[in-house]
Image 1 (tube, rainbow, N blue to C red):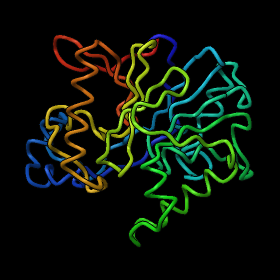
Image 2: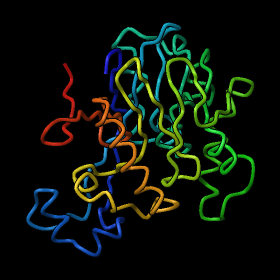
Image 3: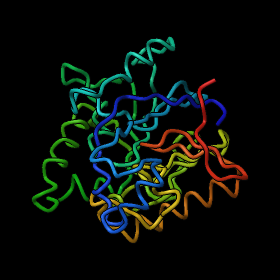
Image 4: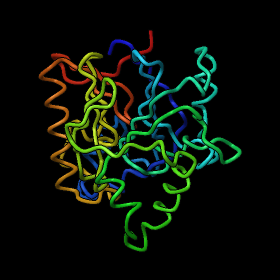
Amino acid sequence: MRGVVPIRDGSFAFDPRLMPGVRAAPDEAARLLGAEALQEAIEVPVWCYLVQTEDGPALVDTGGGALMGAGFGALAGRLAALGIALAEIRTVWLTHLHGDHCGGLLGPDGAAAFPEARIALPEAEAAFWLDAAPPAPLRPIAEDARRALAPYAGRIARVREGDRVGPAVAQAAPGHTAGHTAWVFEDHDALAAGDIFHVPALQLARPDWSTDWDHDAAAATHARQALTRRAADRGWALLTGHGGPLAPGPEGWAPIRPE
């Protein structure tokens, strides 16, 4: 994980019963969470990743920012604390277009939070949310995505699997969303895996437990298994959107603590 800094933008309350597997096996879920009984809500953090590149600082995802409101928006202050101005960010690699991952593209005034950044957006994700009307229940998400991306018109690169953007190579990982994409940072010994986990304590033990938010549960399970296997085989850090950075080891995956 050389040259990568995890940054927590915020968090939200998550009902673990949003996983069909948890609904079917609540006692097992409580045990995996280290609780006597299953809680109605657990805190789920939202992580972004600062990546140092030859062209300057860059980000994987942006958190919820101003778009998501209360509980989000810590990214800008944490970049400032690291001595990085928002205008220094040159690239943003998006894993998908849910608001808690792209919302930080907007500043409080509705303008681009990163005025010099180019956005790397998976083509399949753009096609689903931007190019056509998604199913009615998902249209508010599409509207938020369009709003977040609007200030970056002319600076959005649509990418397909295998495309390279700076030090990152796109790897398709659909399931959570239609175009959900991981980013491989081989020179940084890291794989940015987006939302393959919402609760690693549950889903590392039971990779077949997807969430009601996943567009395709079977595909999400496949992506979870494939990405964790690839990262483990290479000894890479797994940069997850809600589990933070994880390191492979003989006892399994473990959180990477800040230095």
